[in-house]
Length: 291
Image (cartoon, rainbow, N blue to C red; front, side, top):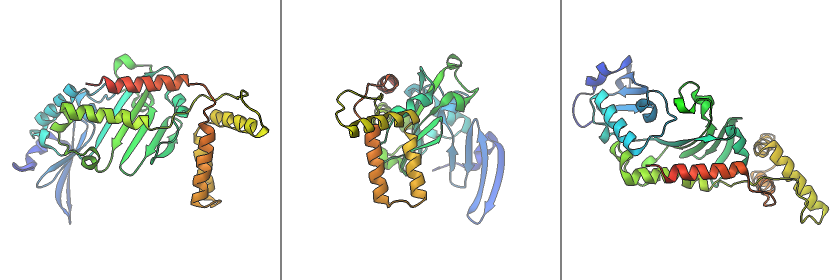
């Protein structure tokens, strides 16, 4: 903060705690879902702008207008101009009302270049780097009661892109509170959600193929690919992790094995996945028409 007394916002907060340490004197508190830290020369906030704006519910879409209103409302409750706040992290997401349970779509999503693919559990799929993370998960299970009334009882797949480090560098812009609702920036960050999705390897539906098979080796590979699809992509990840823990192969040999298994799993001999087509269509439309 370039002016004013940061302690003036303390009456706006609840659950205030005073902290004294060698690093200085500060306070923590809460306001409408945000955790607030108050220092001598500034304040920091950690929370969800969507949950703040929609009173705890974040399955609704933060349009550009809603984002602008949320920044204004946050400024009003804190009596601080949040348009000038430096944004250090941003999560961009959409919620898709799917035909099937969210985890049914994970088998369609293969590897992504330069990202580590992993499962936290059966209902959550991660793609991770040190600077950003993509997550697909069951929003209905995570949100429980905090769901838009019109979506109650629906299958809700959440696709989320998290910029966890180096936000300005990754987006090539100085991101302030007011930047979030600038037309060009809003469109750019929403399209980034789609661009990241496009580079994920898409897996076709795999049947036990007999057409064009001429050798025993080709028949074995077709059956192996089918069995891999039945058990799921995580089977490869789990198997490689186990071999790594037991030091069975060098890092290079494990890389070659993973690549070979993924090639078999992604065999082009298959049909276009109904679930994959649905997911592609929804994510494209959600990002293309976001305003």
